[in-house]
Image 1: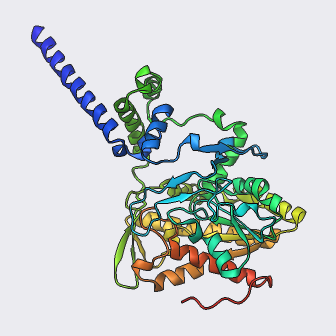
Image 2 (image 1 turned 90 degrees about the vertical axis):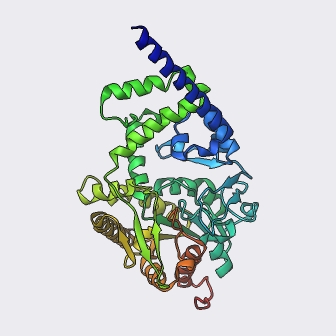
Image 3 (image 1 turned 120 degrees about the horizontal axis):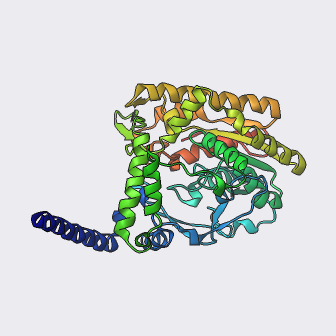
Length: 422
C-alpha cells in the first residue's frame, strides 16, 4: 500500500511539473496553439492570445441588425480601421489589410463617402480581400478596368441571406446602378442551410449544440470541465480541454479526404488543401446527392434580391465563383476518387440551379466556370488562379473574375471595350 501511494504521488508530481512547463511554454509562445483549438478557449483568454498573435477579436467587431429572422451573430463586421492579419503561409499572400469606415475591405478607406456607386459587390471571402490587398480584390479591379465606381461589401463567412441584409444596410443608401452578388460554390449552400435552421429555432443561441463525443456521459463530462474555474486562467487546461473536443470532432469526419493535387502547364504538380480543411463541403455535397437538402434553400434569398432590384431600380447580377477543385477539374487528382466524383456532381447541380433561376426570376447570370477552367489550363503554377493552402483566389484569380464581370456589363452599354487578356 505504501509503495502504491509513493508511485501515485510520484506520478502526480511529474504531472504537475509537466502541466507547469506546458503552462509556461504556452504563455511564452502562444502562437503554438492551433487556431482550431484556440476557438475553444475561454473567451477572455482567447481575446488575450488573439491580441498577442494579431488575430481578429470580438472586441474588434460590431453587430449590424438584420430583419429576416436569421442568426444575428452572422452579421458582425470589423470596427473601422481594424488591421486584419492573414496567417496563411504561402508565397504571394498579403499579410495585413486595413478595413474602411464600415469595417469592409476597400481602398481608399473613405470610399463609402461617395454620394452614389455604379456597382455594389456582394459576396463572402472570395469577394472580400482574403490573402490579397484591397486594391487587388475583384471589385477594385472591376473599377480599375471599367472606370465604374465600385464598392466592395463582401465579407467572410456569409451566405446569400446575409448578402441581402448587407445590401439593405450598406448598399441601398448609395443607390447603386448595378448590384453584383457573387455566389461561392464551396460553402454558400451550407450558409443557406444554417440560416433556415437558425430561423426555425428562433434564435441562433437557442440551437442545440452538437456534441463531438459519441457517448452522452462524455458530453456531460466535457461540459462540466468547460465550466471549471481552472478554465478561466490556465492556457494549458484550455489547450487540453479544447484539443480533446477538436480531436473528437475531427474523428467524426476522419473518413473524408478532401486533399488533391493539381498539374499545371509548366509540368509542375502542386498539392492543394494539404491540411484537409473545409471537409463540411464534402458533407454538404453528400447531403445534396442523397436528397437530404437541395439548392432550393437559396430560393428566398434570390427572390428577396430581385424584390429589392425592382423596388430600387438596380440591375441584379449573380456571378457564380467555382471552388478550386472545379476550377482545376481537368488538372486535379483527388486522394479519394469517390470524393472527386461527388464534388463534380455537386458543382453541376448548383450551376444548373442558378442558371435555371436566372431564367425564372430575371437576374443576369455570369457563370465564370468555363473561362476559369480554360485559363487554369494555360497558366503556369506560379501564376495560378487559386492559392494552394487556403484555396481562395489569388491576385490573378481576382483579375480574371473582374474581367468576366466587366465583359458582362459591356452588354449593358455602360462599360467600354476591354483590351485582350495579356
